[in-house]
Image (tube, rainbow, N blue to C red; front, side):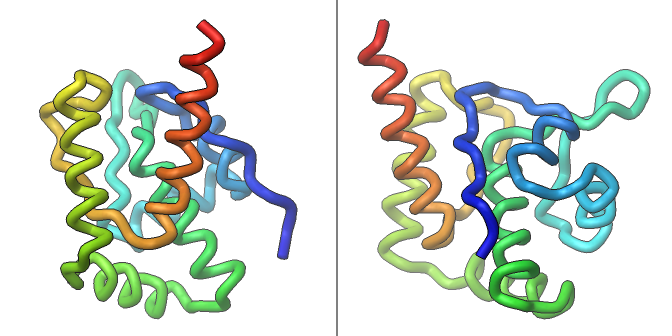
Length: 139
């Protein structure tokens, strides 16, 4: 196992450089993964600059875990992500409710579809919520 990844800041958009640092991969790897994983669709603005949202950073961490920690191939990781996303579970329904609550509070873009959340994402989401709570208690 490598070093732990840094916490994801409470921001709406992240540049490719920021995502690379948050996920422990290089920018060219992120661009390659966009071609291989249809779930990764960062918004592109002026000059074809990529802007990732929080759920995409979590997805990249999930992909990184499957490839680097669990030893999946690209094809195996793609299949695993599709399997997990297609399985309805109690965890996914709770996480979907949490994402809808966040969207209703104006913390997520209402024009984007809510992503399904796996167990790995739920753990990251829980950690992020604790970090947000800590930040809010400081103000």
